Amino acid sequence: MGTGIEEIVHIIPLGHEFERAIRPFDTAKANRVYLIVDSGAGSSNGTSDRDICMQELQEHYTQMVTDHLMKEKQIDVIVRKTMTFDLTAFLKELSSIIYTELAKGSRVHINMSGSGRLAAVAATLAGMAHGIDVYYVHSERFAEDNGVFDDTNERYRCGVSICKKNIVTNFTNFQFVMANEVETLILQKLYNEKNGGGVSSSELVKVLEEHGVEGFERNQDEYSKVRKYQDKNTRNDMSRKLMRLNHSILKGMIEDKKYITKGKSGRKMLFVITPSGEYALHLSGKEMSCD
Image 1 (tube, one colour):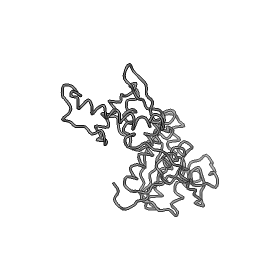
Image 2: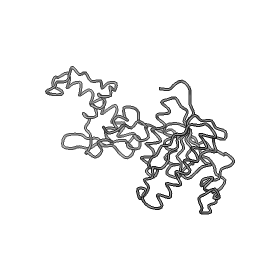
Image 3: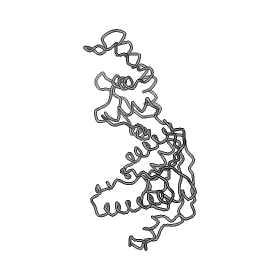
């Protein structure tokens, strides 16, 4: 729930850049900036000489941007680490921040130009999916690199890109059809059980009952300790819920959104999450743990 006072938040996936990250704040105001940086788990899990060197450079630019924004602009900076070479992990991190900040009533912006191509894709997808401002900071040229990483090296001082003119392009958002609250609950269950061969519709009903979804409320007095659906009224109640689930919810998730597929195991119908469903879950920002 928001505080009633709108705060301005920028999210910057940050690679080996400085000027591309800080230049918009020559004119733009912000209360808070999130820097999303690589966790160091590169292609060799951070153990190769190249990974170690890249991580040292990442820490250098992260510290430069943090110091500039906090000391020169008095902007709070939060550094979040994730696997920036993993699109799924990146989307989850971005969407989680966006969802949390929008819930507070913040106005959120994403700088999609502060890191590599994969980060740019993730930032743009997440931003447009949530309907927030995505912007690109133009560079004038690449910084010159003399191979010595100290203040004599332009790349060391400025990052990969030279940006002196503060030229920013705001992207036009395209409409994304996001998973709604009920669909997200179902996707989470299917994702948690994706290695188990599928989830039955009765198990999905239980999830909706547990979360008090309208039309799926559970009447505890109707449940027997010996047999779950003993009396006729309870069996009828379950039948109504299964019909509602299959026709009002799952049908659209299967046929229209392609979030899930269905198959049979004996006489039982089982549902499985698709890759599109996984991305929809990760983009929601509302992903829960598997406990």
